[in-house]
Image (cartoon, rainbow, N blue to C red; front, side):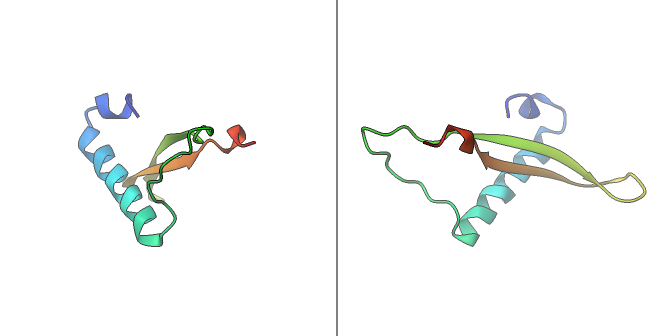
Length: 73
């Protein structure tokens, strides 16, 4: 995340982040919740990828927020 926002294309990565969060909200798959005092939240991380067309030109910048599910108990 920090590295992507230091790149010259940071505006495109920020837009990709906004689109991913809005998509999660629109699909109803993501909400902000209070964590019970005796529980730890599952962490997340951002995965960024440049999607390309067949001719190798840039189609779009894609950001995905993924759960670090290996931390589940």
